[in-house]
Length: 194
Length: 134
Image (cartoon, rainbow over all chains, first blue to last red; front, top):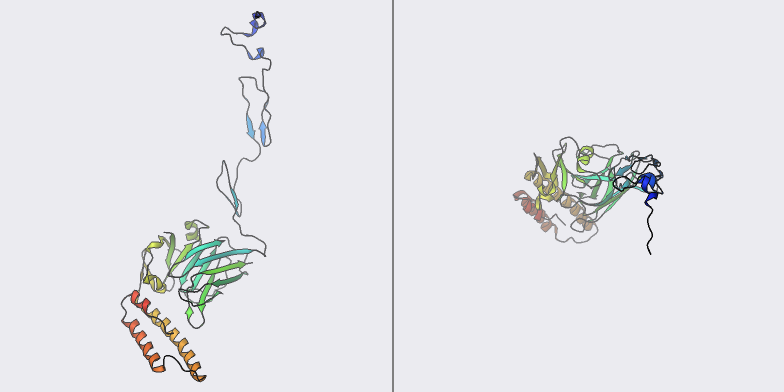
């Protein structure tokens, strides 16, 4: 079955190319609503435009103890500050000191370990502690033989031997064996509480 | 290979600062090391027997070498410190009526031989093979 199309119904809405105007459509506009964190939007006519603006977070910046992986797109936020509770360790490290060089195995809040002289090491905090009233506990393995050592916090300048006050940014470790002087163990492990 | 930071101490020896990787090495250089410290590859440090005599290292420009007379003096110092410990133990044995092995004459001869070997050594490899008294 065929039915004749009444062109008179379209006549006023067709141009010479046979295209209809927006007003000739059943729904001639759309509504764009601003969602969470956005502003703007509205009801533009077809062929028109509308702008949406970010009314919420417009930038990300690292604060104290916070580091960012980037400034746009997928940004990872990392807490780089030491823990604050006195019941948790503020720093720790496990390193090898035998053989004239140091290998760092693992650490937390330690930026570097300096090999000053045989049996004397300076541990530097990545983030300084609140003050110098912290407690250091250390232990170690044997050297290349079977000699056992002790590890203590030393309040001396490792090269001059002069007494020095504790620091909130670093401390000196001394490794040695009674009667035999300073020694380099294979592994030195320490933890710091404050 | 890893990058490390080296500098000369107030007593003329060398300090080696090893970053843990928590901070960029340039930040460690600025924060943990004195002015004049330099970043080098750890493969440039003395190796083998030379690495044992860390307290005798000297920094010339960006090169670390072993000052052999200093290494020799440190070896003799450690040898004598160990000799004192062993001698004390032997004295306690004597007071307790326990025979020492080896006997005193051999022990003394071994000490003199060890000291002579240290004095005649010309390389760190030779020094490293000389055992302390036991």
